[in-house]
Length: 151
Image 1 (cartoon, rainbow, N blue to C red):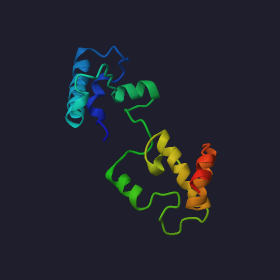
Image 2: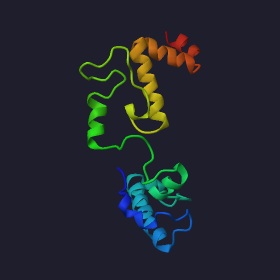
Image 3: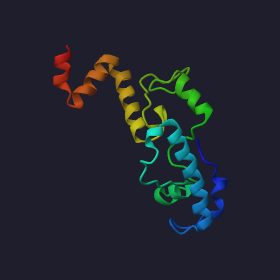
């Protein structure tokens, strides 16, 4: 989930790599916690991690020109997750939704670039039908020979 902006507010206005020892120590605690989780879930990685660089909402502000560490689209809340499952689709399950109006973009399937592409695939399938939509996408990706071998 999102990291509360309040945790980083006192360093607002500072520059990357010039935020002081207290900030670096704060980040180090997160780094250690995340590595502990990694090593618990994947013990074979212990002793093999060579480099760690942890970003915070302040880094997001700096690199993406944001104001409170937000990075992508809508905030991922439980309500948004529920909407993703129940009705937020290329053809939303909403009463009186305009015929022919489809949704595509990062907030339809999740946040970021890859989910935006996935939502475009879903919208294409909603227009053309599932199988024709996928066949067109596979063809565009250059897997035409693979399809001939399968069928």
